[in-house]
Amino acid sequence: MPDSFTGSVWLRPPRVRTGQPSLSREQIVRAALELLDAEGPAGLSMRRLGTRLGSGATSLYWHVANKDELLELAVDEVLGEVYVPELGDTSWRVAASISANGMRSALLRHPWVIGLLGQHPTLGPNAMRMGERLVALFLAAGFEGMALSHATAVLNAHAIGSATSEAAVTAALKRTGKTYEEVAEDIEPYLERLAPDNPNYEKWRTETGPLRRDPEKVLEETYAFGLERVLDGLELWLEKNPAADR
Amino acid sequence: MPDSFTGSVWLRPPRVRTGQPSLSREQIVRAALELLDAEGPAGLSMRRLGTRLGSGATSLYWHVANKDELLELAVDEVLGEVYVPELGDTSWRVAASISANGMRSALLRHPWVIGLLGQHPTLGPNAMRMGERLVALFLAAGFEGMALSHATAVLNAHAIGSATSEAAVTAALKRTGKTYEEVAEDIEPYLERLAPDNPNYEKWRTETGPLRRDPEKVLEETYAFGLERVLDGLELWLEKNPAADR
DNA sequence: TCGGCTCTCGCACAGTGTTCGAGCCCAATG
DNA sequence: CATTGGGCTCGAACACTGTGCGAGAGCCGA
Image (tube, rainbow over all chains, first blue to last red; front, side, top):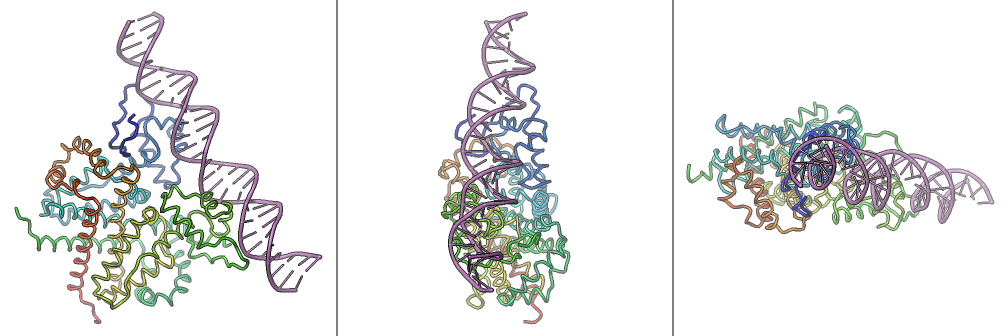
């Protein structure tokens, strides 16, 4: 194994399998994913993963350099779940929406990914495939050069940023095991105590009453509203900067 | 201490200090922040934090319920760094830009925050202050009701999502200790190997050559481009949905 | 002087990621 | 057929983690 490569799994030549091993990288990653989904990042330990696979904990280290690398693989596995439409099926707007929706829901299905996204650049094969399709999509829409990559970046940023905020509230619900109404009640006195400092927020909160509505729906609406603004902004840019060669 | 509150520090009545303790919550949080900034989340352990403060590790547990809660406090401390302009200084567009810029740069100054944002809802006092100001700002711009909160949410989502992507690459640079050029060289063969599967990306990459440019500038441009699109999108929405009472 | 409260801290427990080296079993080689 | 070698598994061990518990120090008002 190379000594000090650049640090990402993807740049390291994979192990070649010759015998008939009882463990495989894919198997390990899948099991890790199950553990992570079920119990969050704290639920994944090498020992637990080992016993779950019916093998010793340290056996994993032959297939995977360390836990960090395993997590990198798990993240890419999740990115493999997001569907990015191929060219020509629909308008770029709905194609972009589908991509962003897919990204958002993958992150919400596997919230532990969110905490990992900022730690390593995601350049696994599935991430690359996503990138490829997004480029194709925005290229067809009329973006070129740097604006092309910028366009893909806003879209992903919106999905990631939205999912982060959403995950935060669902994590709180899951951790406390309370319903949304109960949590809202718990928060209420705290908000009222801070009310004098937050007159505008307080007015909006009491008049609009967002805490009484189905939080899942509110979060989804928030995301969807933002997505439409982003797409509007991109469309406007396209109108003002028509592609030279198309 | 209450047994099973809703789970966030902010909802728990704080300890009142009567004696002359040698440790304080603020002191602890500040020291934790230094450790986190210097060495990332892995560098913060209760024992190390204790010795850094010249006291036993378990002494911290009188001021802070557990490590999770300490991290919540640290996150809010960082949010205290972002400046959100008050009303009337400038147009809502530049005010919103300043807010988002502040959020982004605070996250890039303290990248470990990014991994924590999705774990707890951020309702510390500094987060609330940010929320209050953002509400005031977008209220003045003409947003009302749900659209008001949606508008603040897109802005934050863009800052968070962008910072996440940026942090990923700077983390890679920091971890490997290599320059950007070196990393780009390491990645090159991997990208070329995947090239057949990614024709569009490959064409864009080789023609536009983003890997040769100063990455910091490219990331900043990407963020700024996205921000303008978001603001354009919001402005467009305002034009099409004029506020009823203004 | 006597409780009682705030605050500090040493010990201990269960668990973590990871290294090392021993050993298994199968394939190819001599 | 015997021997070597490498793919693969695993147990023991190390240094370290977060945290519960109980003892105790120092100060307060009575």
